[in-house]
Amino acid sequence: MTTAVFTLQGEYIELKALLKLTDLVSSGGEAKMLISEGQVLVDGEVEMRKACKIRAGQQVQLGDMLIQVNAA
Image (cartoon, rainbow, N blue to C red; front, side, top):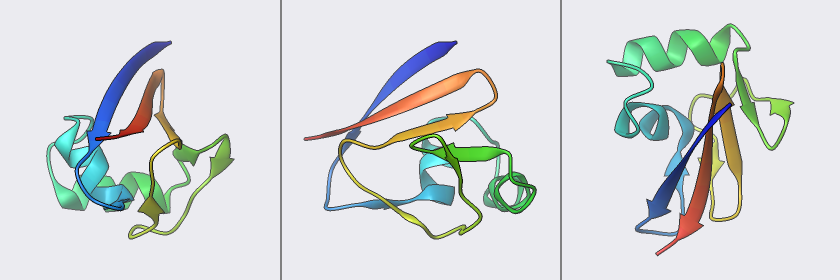
């Protein structure tokens, strides 16, 4: 599994935006589709909310890619 670190600039980032900013998807539409298909995990649990607020300390997984979200 590959791990990447994302440094949060505010209080939170929406899940779909995080996937796009980390280049795991090429568009917001692709992010929404993957989330709605149940392919994205937040802290090890399937997350179906596209606008789920991701905060520092959380982990997001898509396939073999893990994103660790850190505070600025």
